[in-house]
Length: 202
Image 1 (cartoon, rainbow, N blue to C red):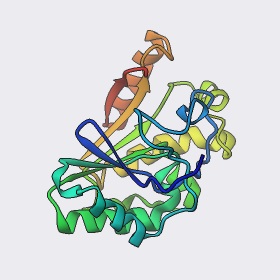
Image 2: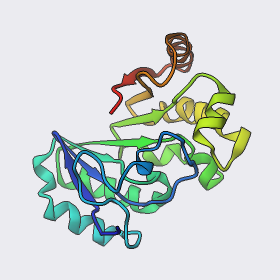
Image 3: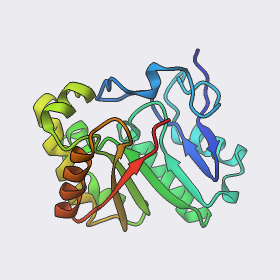
Image 4: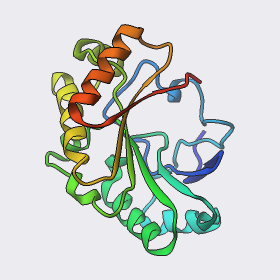
């Protein structure tokens, strides 16, 4: 089922669903389980919204009452990079909300250039799905269209984006990998100079 559910609230945050495009086909993706998340309306979009549609959705959702606004929907937000940047600029200029990007970290491969400088002053935080410390496991479970290029690019994205965004965190999901793998992920994050967080399995 497709709708134009662009802005949806989860707990204290307002989430923005900009696109359904994604360069990965993760075996564990929540999109495989249903049309929405946490009781939201369907997040499959009838069409990809332009900035004016996203702005209207923000206003309709009374976005200024939220402490944090997060780019995270049923796709990789950086696939819609221009709309993302324009929206983040609008939020920063008109509210006190913190702005976060939840991403798979493949934006530089998607756009074939380093896009991380574009986030400076627009994003307060970036959360990157690391998923595992092992390149072969990542390839088999996340199934990126960029194949073997993807995992090194994800790590490089984290290294670069920390120069432009105050808070960068890489994440895995509890129970989906071993404790040994989690320890290895912590080591990767330490070497990159970013935070590591284990998300709860939903």
